[in-house]
Image (cartoon, rainbow, N blue to C red; front, side):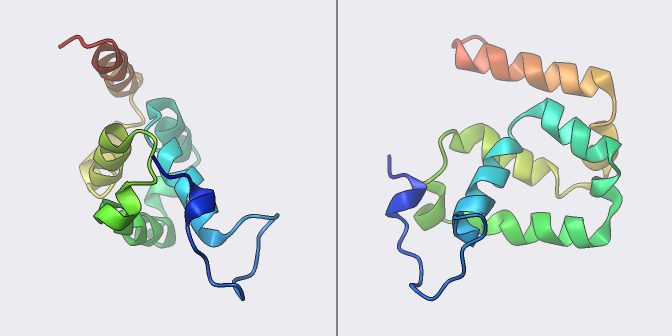
Length: 114
């Protein structure tokens, strides 16, 4: 699997803390696979902010194969990105029960359970 360092960025692209915008977006989008992190974003009211919601929509470029190949765990990452497009889910992720179900589902999937 390629890593972000193999992504050919424009030589004139500014770095942010030593990283390209793509590398930062890759790191962020992968963190969305963590239900506890999604809950944190919701608890900070970021999932109610129209500009943040627009950013989540923008990040859907990771659905394209030329970007999906950089994801360590494409299944959970892309599913989280898909769910976060839904207003109902952005509200539901505040619930500890929802977070628990997602976390349990992720653990079961990682060990081959159903």
